[in-house]
Length: 255
Image 1 (cartoon, rainbow, N blue to C red):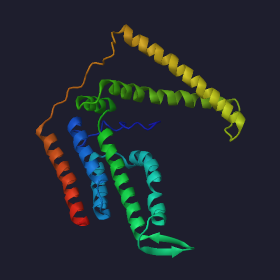
Image 2: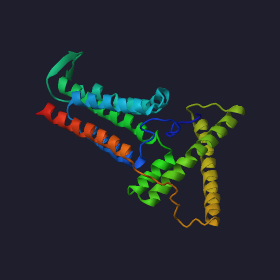
Image 3: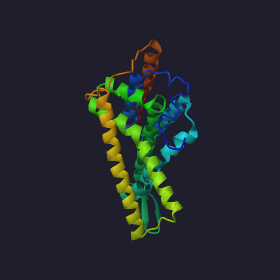
Image 4: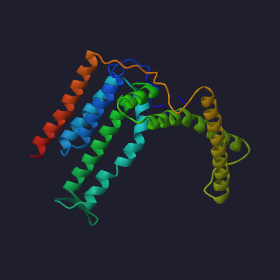
């Protein structure tokens, strides 16, 4: 894939892919909230293991997942490095005048573990069904129709805008332009972004007029028909048992 489509592997076959998207969204969100509310590092590590297990069940390629998870991981990595220096508690180590606390290290690792587990679970939710199907499922769960349309149109044309900008920068490079950290480079890139904005506005106006000419009145037809079967409920029950089980273990661990 030339760009990171979150539903690029929705055509695969797995128990997660065959799960009714509405039940899947609700069940997975309950599990995510259960994990991010954990207070025990050991239980949070178990939650991360469960998240990875569900990811493996979904059969989504590791390279695809790692490509998107690396940025949240870089954001979460500083927590176990900074909190030991800033939180009070028992000092585990003093190095070059800096004191590292055990409580800070545990809290930092806890925050990083919970965050990684939540991010990992996003992929079985959105990566196992076409994006349109997932959004329509969220609409059937109560997501406002206006928000639904914003998501659908934004996702549909985001990659197109990126390709246009890439084409513009490639054209500039063929004319001898090289990116530098100076004012002339900022002016050229600013002009390119301005042109892209104008083209985007003109394209959106043409698309809207074309939609109106075809009968668009502010509402999109709901083309998705969902049907829940017994296997969907069994999968939901298993995930909910895991979610509440984690909370029970966490309660026992912190008492």
